[in-house]
Image (cartoon, rainbow, N blue to C red; front, side, top):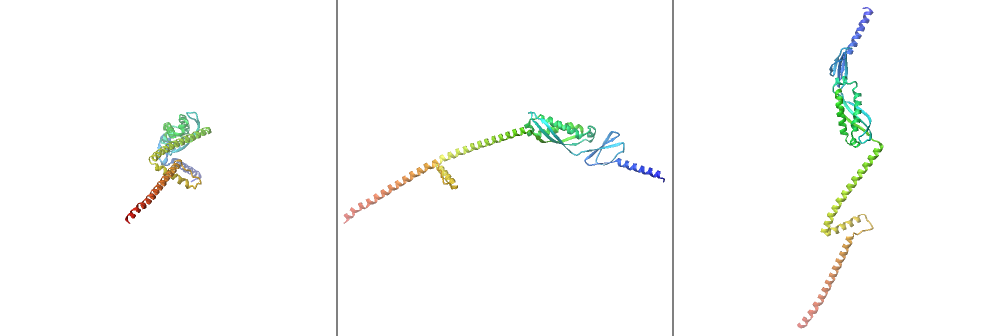
Length: 285
């Protein structure tokens, strides 16, 4: 075989190898292949080893995994004319491989732009307080709007979350003062409720002490015990205790006087008994 024939055979073998390499495609598990033949969509190729006609066919691989797309911070004016910067994150996935290739040129860029405009539109319909407290509802509204728009592109938006809300410094200070005032109001209300409960309990205790005067004296003695715990050099006597001490002194004086009267009466009676016994003895003699 002459060198020219060898060269031609080598070229043919190389061309066959290149054609074989170009005709073999591997579709991974998380992908689907959209097959174009001469510019027309022939069908979808599922995961596995697939063969195409070189030059004539073109297999476009589409990933079906969930894509995480950050939505960059947007300067938004709320319904009550407060300027805030809000960033978010969206999660979407391709559900129709053919539509995602044929209906739109760049799915990721289109969803990014429509997500930014939708974020501004939805947040602009809410006040600042609603934006801060009703994030779940805002997330749901944004997701529903995006899902309705992207369904024609073969894409489903699974989740949208507000990631960061930046407020002006003046608004932060105003909100801090508002929160502080709110907490002071709650503290005063709780203190007033405690005073009311305490006053009611003291009223019940006073009624009990009026019905049982001895209970007041026991409470005074208990107060003295509590004062003596700290080893104080000064003892404060409550006014009711001083009156009690006076009554006790009067009682002791009355008892002392009664004892003296009884002793005097007994002495008189003992002297009268011998004087009555003497005449009887003389008479007997």
